[in-house]
Length: 167
Image (cartoon, rainbow, N blue to C red; front, top):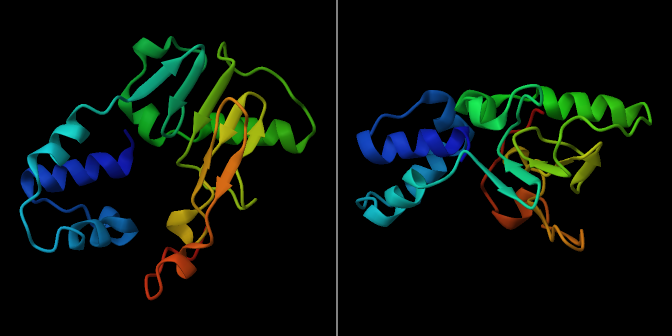
């Protein structure tokens, strides 16, 4: 679950539209329903979404965590919004420093877009957001083999649709 998912769920349940979400993808999400009622299973899917997922000491989270606090004691604001872990990992990687920042073997995050055109590993953190919301690419990766799959840039996939243009 991430910040945009919470805004989408709020709109689905109440009709309330956060302006920041509307201009950052919410408009397209709303229009995708073509004025029809939201199917209950769409609401149920988002209501059941987890704030993070742990698999074999690999952590999957939308934005980040605070490695100094036990994961069970952290709040959703950190999971949905915090970029500190991603920034710290990138800073170390840019200096050529590969150090351990957490107790996890790998952490997969989105939310902090990178301009490399494919996911980047910095320390044990994999930065997966390659800027699809910013007219970049959509990326995914097989976490076992590390094989990456990267789409074409957003404007070529959706002619006439504009992503955000400033990083």
